[in-house]
Image 1 (cartoon, rainbow, N blue to C red):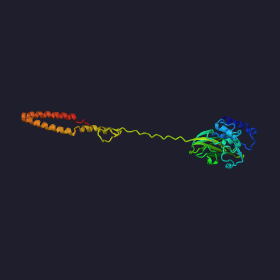
Image 2 (image 1 turned 180 degrees about the horizontal axis):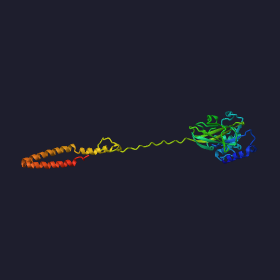
Image 3 (image 1 turned 90 degrees about the horizontal axis):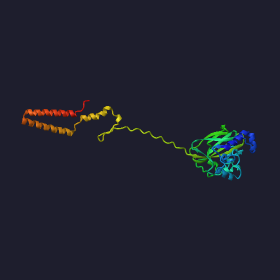
Length: 314
């Protein structure tokens, strides 16, 4: 934030004595406001970063007077009794007239986008550094930004820290956001200084989105083993890679061993009977020599056929 950082740098460079010449007389020795997530004071008040936003213009109009300095929203002598000193509806202004425009119930305040359940880094500008305790609240689930902010909208602090480190002019903290908040919410920060009577109040607007769902890992598809096809219906398919060379060769061997079907065997029986009738007829008609010759011819043909269909030697 250029304007906010420039104001902070001038205050630190000039020292407390120089700052006292330009600031109203007050007992406080510490000034500050959240710059990330951006607060309404850091956005809209004098020296703010988003003074041209519609909500900031409306806040100035409702204020009826110029805003005070963005880092000077402080109330003395509260002493931890915040709910007794700051009434409902005036939490963002700290019930100070010069900041009352910051209490407008609107849904368009300059906001910071965050994710539910995430760790939120917080930078709180310490234009005049001092020790103290920070209490950070978040509006409850179901908070309605169209209604004035009250203490009943806040639960327990999501962060309480004393004397966080100051680096580059800002106090650095982190808070864990609840997982059950989405939409518009308010981060309410209370800084109670430890060596002055002053307490600082601020509202930072958030737009909280739901966590991104992690896509489920796709299951690894197992390779389907190739199976052999059976020529016979009802046969059980066996994976090819599970067959041994010997078992793969068995169907061929079985085919050679059973080359004659029952019908073929019946046909051979009828041929054999016919041959016997012919031999008997030749013996009667031409004599034994002709029958013997026919028998030799038949034996030769039978041997040739046997050789043709016989299975190969293993």
